[in-house]
Image 1 (spheres, rainbow, N blue to C red):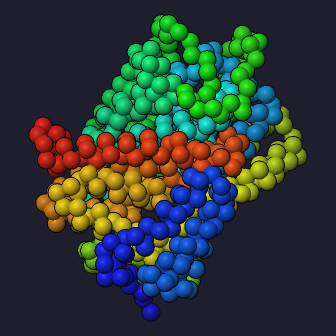
Image 2 (image 1 turned 135 degrees about the vertical axis):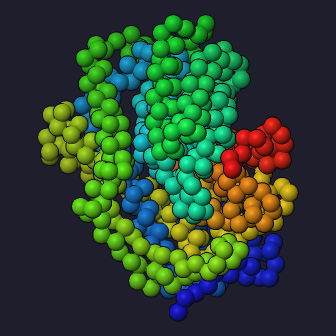
Image 3 (image 1 turned 120 degrees about the horizontal axis):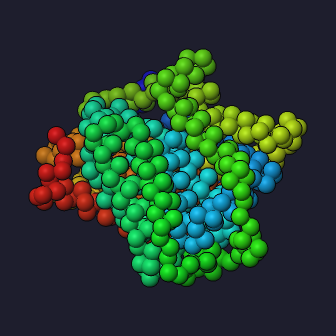
Length: 554
């Protein structure tokens, strides 16, 4: 028998919305308190979500438990699989000493910490977001920054803030494709609309990033470099999304920005070199500054090439891995699909969330070969062979990586389970419908709905699939552009990426700063909320105020 979702179980919108929000609010509160370990908080949040789904929303217990199991699987594959193999690759480069050489190479481009943040967290991170997404950029850039002796909070927090502007086009355009699937709108139109929203924030985020690190005065002292970084990312982002396609936007924009910034730094230097590895105003000095001798030991060009080779291979392999022909071939070779018994096709979404009752599928596609994490593992094995590490040595390092990540992987799985259960129970739609009641202010709150979706699910793609249909339906009801509001879901969602608990756990894991997830969340939360509100303000202007209305794609 098919169970139909109920979006107002108490007959009162406020009470029903509060019930739907309880698991997410309590989870974030437990993590932010710093008194509850993340894996325990995740487990507790999941149990609360189960209770709310069964007792408040009337979801049959069997369906709720199976939805939880389905979410646990999707948490481990592909998200946990990415984190595990990125950290394994990192361990290999540290073991061989190549990571230390690359650190000195980055320092050789500039010793200024602010410029290193721009180069690594923003430019390098955007490339990985475009090629792989799903936690990869935060894992890689946070590991590099901690290797450069940034403080753990700086490495984690700045990597999270930087991983915003490129997210809507991440993983070879997966969020745009997910949005197109959920709305039935041409992905090229959606890509064009997002490309008329996010370039403004591609200019803002580099300034915001450096202000968060060194304060406004520190940012103003390197404003030419920040401007170069932002403009050379924003312009290609607009041009590619509007005149080519939404699939390669981040790849092109990040490569152009990185090359332009490095070239600019060869002819321009800041008057004062910023050497502090800590966030301004934060005492998280558990990482010592690098020895003076380390800064003056310049590696040779050959050493730099070898040190960068694993990361170059990673970029190349992930770009190939995510390309449509290769992905299709790998999935054709091995892609078993498991229909979750007792869950698949046994729950349906109801109007007004969808136009007509729609059965929800629960199919776990174990496309192991095409997973981004598998491409990373292949890169790690090739790199290990180039480093002349024995198979036994690599196996031992892999085992150590798994042991180090045991709690983090469990936390990530629990977070995905909570998000999946929220979706199957209809609690997500209850929150979405509450936002939809804001009437003329809906363009603003529509962007915040995307922000909430990413904060809850950890993925802009998931948020788009979750709320894309609702955005389109509500826009039509209110006389707004469906393309504008669907794109707003994705653009607003990118700002939720820095506070989703999966990303925070990935950042703490990459920096080895276990148990401090609450400090990271408290640091990034207000950045996330304020930036999301700014996106909402832009959407309001595009909905009602000329000349911004002329930017809307029809």
